[in-house]
Length: 304
Image 1 (cartoon, rainbow, N blue to C red):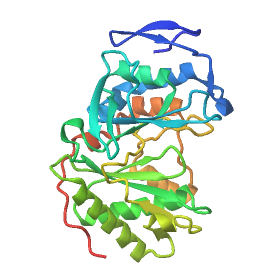
Image 2 (cartoon, one colour; image 1 turned 30 degrees about the vertical axis):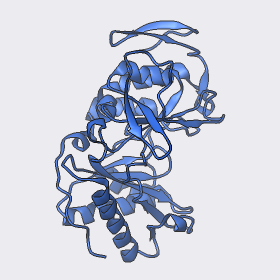
Image 3 (cartoon, rainbow, N blue to C red; image 1 turned 45 degrees about the vertical axis):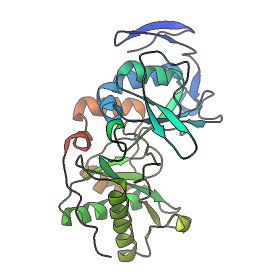
């Protein structure tokens, strides 16, 4: 789908009639990447992205004036939403939140038209809010550590999971780090996944104290990689696979192969922009498909 230029353009998306606006507005100034191109990217990537969002409460990060301007998180689904946008009510600490749920391409395009550049879904599905379907480890480098150090640590994570009989899937954060997912798709609660993730992070820190930290308060330690295990809680979300990021250029949180990760340890670069990701999916399919389908039982936490 390539939406025509102009304001107030009406298009048919998956049988829904949508009015798109300000398509020529530049949202990524460094790349001259417009709102129309953002919408086009999300429409093209929808066949592989929607399955990763479907049935999940979605937090959005919006930049109405582009990435050079202020952005904000949005949890409640806008009251002016079309009647065909599904929602899920989640009881939060202060008051209930009515989240948007992206179950089809029309909802995805509608959100893109609102300049919702980043999509952050829950780790659990709406019908089982207390049951995460995956583990996630966010590897965040502290300068001068960078992508190469994250890639090294990702390979160590993979080796540890292998010892525990678990398969894992890597993706770029679309920003400066890497993320490693462990598909579960089996009955488990956040207490179990959070405890397991903390044990993994502490084991890595104990094994590599000069290169790894597990505590958020230590994240500023120069030259180390933070293993952010805390994403495994019901109140946290992680940027979705295939989501754009609000960086100077339209980079994407991109699934990668373990061979690519191993290569980064040597050359230190692993970044993809929207057009590259569409091409990769056409060539490689959805490398993150196991996160949706692979069933794995959570083993006991590893020893320190």
